Image (cartoon, rainbow, N blue to C red):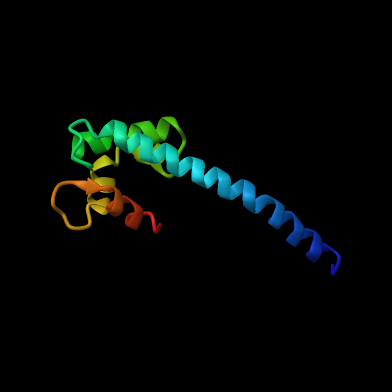
Length: 100
């Protein structure tokens, strides 16, 4: 059992950079999807743009977007992300809603 712990720790150390790289790639893809979904370029998403953002993320298998799309839970996801309830979702609100 004692030998298993160093092996487990070593494998986690080797996996961590790869997982961090994937996380960075996912964040970059989500930022690009946000930019593309923001049709009017005002750096925030209305409900229609948010739906396009979710669908793009689902296509890229990012986060929980596939689940939102599968259950048609766009309005619920939008309400959860729109922290100040102004009818728009910003990048900061999205990050906060994801715990990032």
